[in-house]
Amino acid sequence: MPIFGQGVNYYAFSIPIWFLGGLLVLFVDARRCKMAGQRKDEKFAKFSGWLNIALGVVFLVREWVV
Image (cartoon, rainbow, N blue to C red; front, side):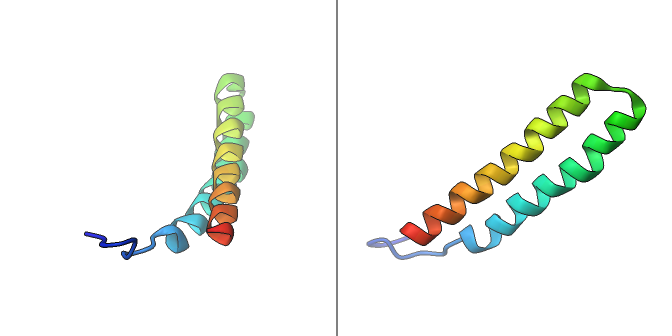
């Protein structure tokens, strides 16, 4: 339990996971859906991949600022 702002910072571990997860979704899942002809799934995979990357950038900037 953090006392006066002290505690464990998990952002150092989670930021690379956001980036890698987004890249994997973009390069693996979206490509697989495109090859299978699943247009809705491909669009959702691209959206979620870019969302993961964007959240990684937001958390990275937050980590630099705070």
